Amino acid sequence: MLVAAKKEIVDDYLEMLEDLNLKPVIVDVDGFALENTYEYNYPKEENVALVDIGASKMNINIISNGVSVVARDIVVGSRQLTEQIQIAFDLEFEEAEALKLGHIPAEEKQEEIADIFSVTCTQWVLEIKKAIDLYHSNHQDAPLGRLVLSGGGSKVSGLVDFLANETGLPVELFNPFSNMTANSKKIDPDYLINIGPEMAIATGIAIRPSVI
Image (cartoon, rainbow, N blue to C red):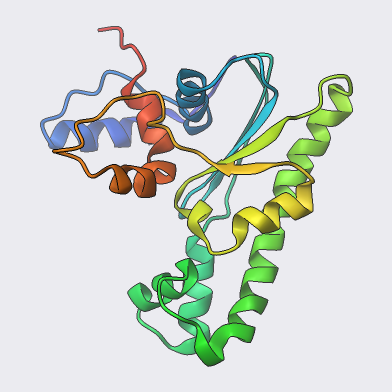
């Protein structure tokens, strides 16, 4: 797999880290870091679509028999929803975020929020379905078994069910810590489960062997 990136962008990140007295040892691609985490926790034989919805972009990596066959980065993300809710109801960002995640009741805003979700989440699903259709057109004898969802956007209320209905695939939230052990006296297990989907890419980078 060959990946190209603008040298200026990579250098900017490296300079930022070095200014913080950190020594960078790995430069990776989000989608491949996601794949690395998945392969650490699950069997490689399964055909699966990995979808990470971050704040500003979505990573799609479809794996067939342990090999990445479709990889896409799309400039859409969960911050879209927060900003649209914020504008629609004249809210602070934190309150709009809580509404998005279902942490506070929508009350009379329910119908308008549903409309915002429908438009934006439909856009996400269309991009995901494009990648799935591309995969199926080239791998008709190896259907996908499921879709594994991660990133902060995976926590949007109702998204798992919506995605399952639209793609026809079983959808589950990614737990990148499922094959790891943690001291429950130091780290709350419920916290790990809650934060897990957001840490999928970071975990993939953290566990990758480095060459110094």
